Image 1 (cartoon, rainbow, N blue to C red):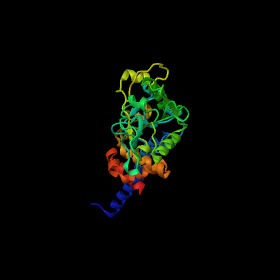
Image 2 (image 1 turned 90 degrees about the vertical axis):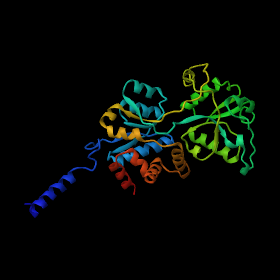
Image 3 (image 1 turned 120 degrees about the vertical axis):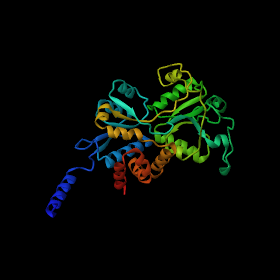
Image 4 (image 1 turned 180 degrees about the vertical axis):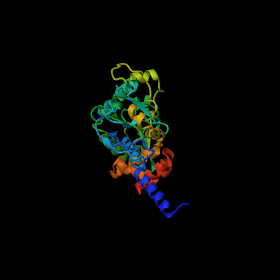
Length: 343
């Protein structure tokens, strides 16, 4: 026969057990005090993705986390050495990352952007199609591809060398700056266009924004995901089809005579240390499921840009507004803890 004393004793044992068992019992972080170190990414979409993953890792799985800032080369090196654990929005372009994979020290997991990223040479939509609402007439209605650009160098005239057009390119040191330099050679455009390097990423955006707001023609390099993609209408110029062998000559600055190739669509992944992946399989499984579309990412980072908000703030807003997405990435208990923490 069960007595009240027995019931109360059983209840006390159950209460003690619940208090002693953390709510993170299913998390690989249980009992671990060292933080999971995320690389601080220097561009907006990378910051947004990092904070998405970090917020869920922290609030949903109960892991201590921290962001370690540094240059791309420094943080990628730290990932390979094991000093960092997670490097979000990895483009897999550098020798550091490639050698890290070859040595088995790091892994690239997941597919963060549906359809992958894309990049190339762009002009404003109104340059080709005009804009009746703004009273802008099309100044290059026949412009379709990079092969047409020599005919339009006067339209995109370089202020410092009026005999040439200007391609507004990436800052020196960016991987895309080296690629654009090679593409101008491969497309036989270097005799017609100046490869004008922006001083910073912010300067690149500012120059594009200035031209767009004034309705002026401009030829520039850009990519998606990026904040301006969510704000303006651009037209990407056609390039020669992607060719694997030629692409290798384009991406290697030391090749003097590259052959033409468009940049392939890039799968965006999460870089993780191999030892970290072994010890945190639940987190890696979560990373592998995270995927957004271009509109979601571009809209989010446009909010970051226009409202001067951090990636952390916008990521929390996004997660709070999209509980169904979180529920598709992680177990229900984890998703519920995330939403509870965001209220």
